[in-house]
Length: 258
Image 1 (cartoon, rainbow, N blue to C red):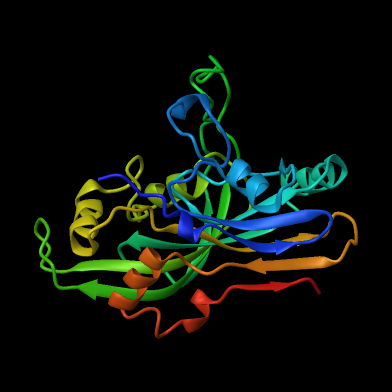
Image 2: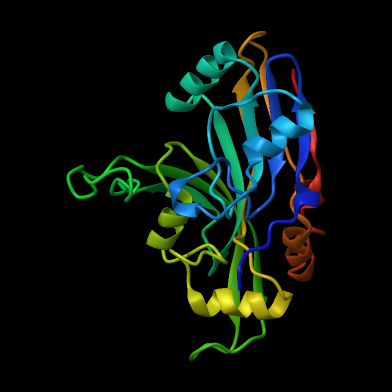
């Protein structure tokens, strides 16, 4: 079962003379890639069509991840924002549903092997593991009456994730490393739990969403805070697990430029 891209979940969160931020639906690529040659729609193109202006990517989200995606509207703010991302001056926060019950809060400090583009690069095994740090905070637990293997019930956690470094697939790889893989992750997740959620909710998705972005505006130097609502499929799952009622603020979209 593939992740469907619901373009009605694509919309502009914020725009001024220097930047534009959009909500990228799960299943939509940020930009063209050699690994997905058959794709015809990308966040870059949809944003340009929406605002009738060229945009400059300054970061990316994985195809299966939904949430905030930021673009610059000219080369100068693009350089400033790209530097903020590369020097880890931007705070990014994600929500994820993971297998098992995770501790209240903590830090995952686990180096990750460099992940390259297998088509464009050939040095996959020549680079040493890179420093990778993720902070996490558990927001809620849930136990579901569903037998799987030798366990009569299944446990899940709603987690806020804050990557302090920007390694490829860092959050997905780190959660898998701690034996709490993200639900819906076909590469690093647990196929049995993925299948259970697919059957339970009638759709497949990666339960990982970029919900907050804190950065310095590239021209005004003002602190910016963007937050995005979750997709309908994500919110439905939260409601079923009785999490949305406990954390109603998770579904609020907001921009605070001050």
